[in-house]
Image (tube, rainbow, N blue to C red; front, side, top):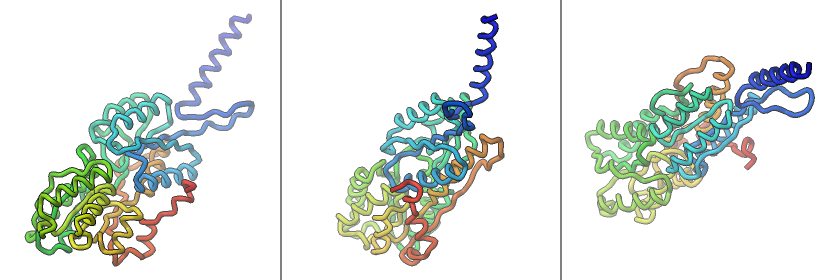
Length: 335
């Protein structure tokens, strides 16, 4: 009875397809290998050194767990639409899970909810997301790290005016650093917060221009500003360039956030007093480990603090700090 046989074959094929589940790859031919899990990792951007370290950590975890990692994010850290499109594309592809650093604490809520509805679990890292529709949050305790920066800058300044160059609105990670910094400065009676309302934007170029305007408005060249805090890599470098242009680098105290080769060299020369450095490699590593553990039915912690370290000229050459500021990325990314 050919009709009955054809129906039976179709039913078997449907069962096999369902059993493979989402995010799995299938090899061709007889004796197919077990289905492989695909995890999408979506950073805020792809140009800053911070994200390269995250990528390397994700690759390390993928190799250990024998899963595939697909790395894709917007080129610029202010392209919210591009990041939403990336997330939606991965959901449509049916990847096994998504690891996401949201550009906006509210702008990605709908996309993550859609992923959850499609049974694609999400681990959020670096910057928090409203709504809580995710498996786990892996990040620095940014408010505590901002307080560390504030205390370090106040100690250097002693007495006088300091300014905060913010990053951009909607970024939860930097907003919390800024919150911690402001709280710290308010606790130092002899240090005045002269400005905390200016935003540097997503690139070094926009941050440099905003820094120039900020320093000029407060007559920094005439002693109106004794110290500055910038809450991420691009704002720190933009402020450093503006201080150099004004002849104030090494004179006006600067505490920044995150590390790059140029920023670390500025710590060595005394142009930067300190950098609060996160552990992006560990962030990427633990985020991928968590999503895979969840997919395999294992319990994971809802929030994980990956920690931070204040890097100064005094501790720059210690083995622990060198491992943070000069990670071996080539081993994982082939660079």
